[in-house]
Image: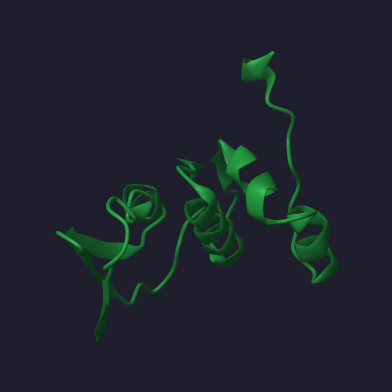
Length: 104
């Protein structure tokens, strides 16, 4: 079973796919389309967000994954989501934002 997603507005919308495949997602990008196949499970990994939508996608994948997921470069989140960690934690998610020591 698979699903196809086609992007018709923006280029490079699937830049987060390599990060999700590191977590065990089965996704292949072909031009402006991504083929998504079901995966029995995702595994926690250290990944990097590239934009706002990628940040949220990786957070949701991390919440569904077994083990710990660390997402770097989540500053994109602040442009589109207010207090996202607090809101997800209120729903039962085990999530926290760590201070970026590399930026200091």
